[in-house]
Image (tube, rainbow, N blue to C red; front, side, top):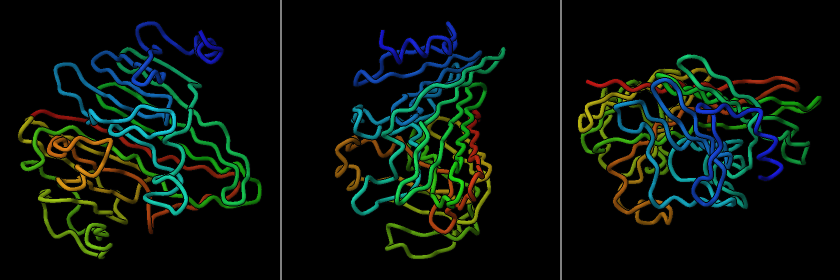
Length: 297
């Protein structure tokens, strides 16, 4: 047992919060609640699994995903911080999704199991003021995620983007519909970042889709007739929603994504990106929270 594993022992709870060796020999936490299970890799604080009893998994994971200490995981819930999308000379979507996080708290109730992970405080640098991230994952009848960002600098503002880049498992993208975004302005990244307004009461995915909806705090519902369920995405302190599916050509271009996997996944991401990026005053903090629930119909 390594020193790190020994340090975690007091935070592990037999049958409820356990440490296992995951893919690529990366450590993962397995959470067991009364009627659900979840898995979180310490690599990137990446939630890779949530499933209620007698139901299909909520989250999509690519069978081609890379599990390596220097690569992001494809699927589940990647953590995006402190920038969203590509960045010259740096990794896309920030640096925390390949960072090593630490388990700092765990707790259980009759129905829920929760853990809190922390990323070691980042010291002041030329670009970023000192800051700390804490991430709470609560598995129960729903999956709840809470990402807290603290600006620990005494003098500098922290300006950042954040996103819980959630991949949902669905039966068939061709039949799936999204509601809750009608009337919202968005950037269509596939169409050269053209500014548009969503007119459809139900959004159908018919090709490559990468839309950044801005200034929206609304819940979003994914209706999946193939698996006869709805997924409800409820969020707080989030002003952006991103809808993404790579479709055929882009799926084939990604080394860590299967050519034929795009019909079984849909990203509906919650965060604060682009024009909704946040500014934290010295000593301030903010929490992006998300609750995901599924309902049969």
